[in-house]
Amino acid sequence: MRLLAGAGLCLALCALALLAVALCTDHWYETDARRHRDRCRKPGGKRNDPGYMYTPGQHLPLRGGEHSRSRAVRAGGELLQRGVRVISRAGEPPVPGRDVSAPPPVPRPYLAVDSHCTRRFNSTVSGLWKKCHREGYDKDTEDLIVKGIVQRCTPVRYHYTSSSLPTNLPINVTKTIRQDEWHALHLRRMTAGFIGMAVSIILFGWLIGVLGCCKEHDLMQYVAGLLFLMGGTCCIISLCTCVAGINFELSRYPRSVYGLPEDISHGYGWSMFCAWGGLGLTLLSGFLCTLAPSLSASQSAVHKPRQENGAV
Image (cartoon, rainbow, N blue to C red; front, side, top):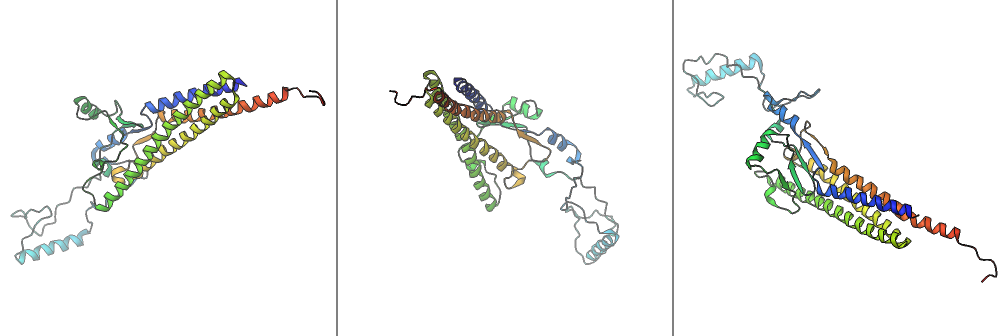
């Protein structure tokens, strides 16, 4: 049954390599804002998705028809007769020589602009330790990085600081953002802490398993398998908290500050898939290493000669 134990140790070594790659790379979560940036650069910045309708009610002109227009003209004439100075909508006095009873000029059509176009979204990749701009996705950002105005990567914070909170917001909104910042910080700490524990436990179990194979000690191989299963459990907790942290960041309040538009592509990167692959190999190696001593003990019991009655 040394074959099963050796296969389990090889799988555990592969799992360690995948987890190490996931820890050292920054492609856990990726965003692509090229389509959103191109849409916002078009005149008006309108979306042309099927079924999408703009409802900018606070910017639409009033539509009262000829009846409302005649009422406004009569009101303006009465004010002039009373000696009241009439101010236009733009805050300027009426032009001398213009007939007050003439209909007002037709307003220009309003171009509906998406509220997300007022914010700048970058194409980024983020991991456990830093968040970076994706190379070759935004020419303007690349020029700023070359000039030294913008950094390519910024470290991920694992400590609380109030400098990252938005300013000029109501006190209740600021309090909510502060509480959400603490919650997101705890999720990041759990993700990094548990995956570090998983790597340490798997490495320790691999060393014990190698010693057990060299000395042909079944108990050490069994303990190595249990350590692999324990490391896989820590890895599960780490990946679940990572997914929960990403979903929490996307659903934070207010949505206008932390939300992403629908035309920005975002998802998990290959570093996340390396971590999930390492988790699967860890659980499989733990199963093999715990199964090998059991099969070895059963075979030794079968091959053991049975003593005859009265034989010494």
